[in-house]
Length: 403
Image 1 (cartoon, rainbow, N blue to C red):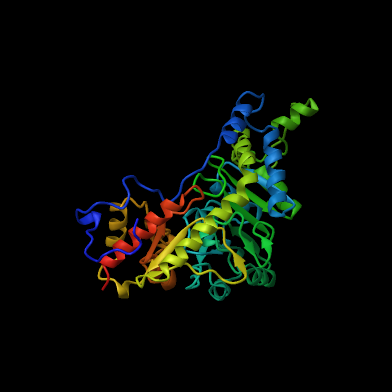
Image 2: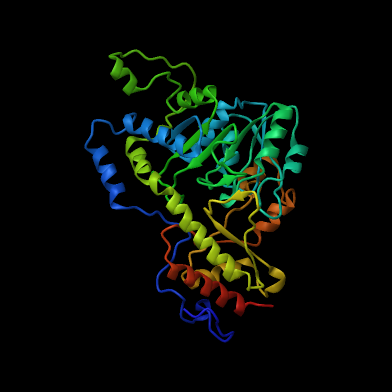
């Protein structure tokens, strides 16, 4: 794996030999025997769901991020939906969020009959621009949903100040940012509510799953009811007290995370710091290698944060290349580097175009970034050889397509 490649080397997309013989995905879960045994123990127990592992996982998670409460959900999307409900969003309300995110961030507002209002992003971090968010506040605004894009926290202090001025709830979408730190504080302990995802490509997985952390007891109670059909007690509580009676006190959903998933999360939580350290090592290797490649703009890290590096999104400097992102993407895939793109800005999806009349051009920073973004492989189980393969493939491809 020679880091210095001749411009005459033929790309795999042009018929040459690929850098790798097998595909390296952009993200992948890492499971150990202890994780499997933890799940097996639950499968042999009396409780597969609404059992003791749920509370154990929630308490351990809350302690890890420094929050008073952690409420588990069956997915990150369910957790976002629950947080939006706890914030009191309903028909006629608005919530401000970023267009540079997965659609679930904005969809959770729509689920409650409210309208998502987008504010463009900062050109360096691709997180929501607080000045643009300020300009988007109206009398109908009830919440702000900043997104920690790629694992880099947003300007939370400034966002919380804005929220305090207008009586808004801040729901941080930190589905990329478990383990990140913002101005010395753990993400999950800063915003009014913080949402995490446990999808397999994240820092910790429960298969599917999510969590909301908060320091407010009223939010925690609302979240617990919402994920359990709006019922004020769960089956284990009723069995422990010898009672059968229950009451549905609000409209909720079945968003419960199983004991199976919670056991998997509990087994992985002690390795979270180790996983984060490895991701940061990989990011450092990428950063060093890509400083010397003129066709690449590496991710920006502000001095007051410590990112979690869920993604490693590069931007292509198209002025230094003779082709566009489509051709670079195809060439890297042909080298068996499983690159991806994060994200198509939400307002450009057909549903949002049809429902809200977006035509493109409304959020130029996000749209400009989208045309240049490629996510390189980033997961804590990558070997140094995997990292070298990515660097070699990127250098090989951009050398070939240099303007």
